[in-house]
Length: 102
Image 1: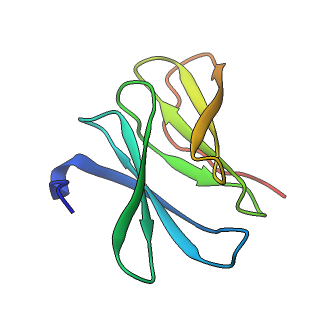
Image 2: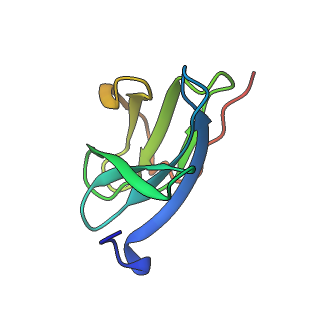
């Protein structure tokens, strides 16, 4: 896959509109999120995000991902279908862990 194990940090799982399952993995050194198709174990896409992405969470319907950036005090909001960052949220402190409620 090209990524070294020490580069991978956090993982979330989501289903696409077509029913395919994907795993989303933050890559701290490259400031990206890898989209891995579970059926083939291949990287389907790479999403550029802000520096040092840490934790990742997915909403209940699998359409939106939230990635923390502790060093920036920021959360990237990713449209899972479009595979792109749609906005960045500034938060106080250094957000690390993240969870999404219903």
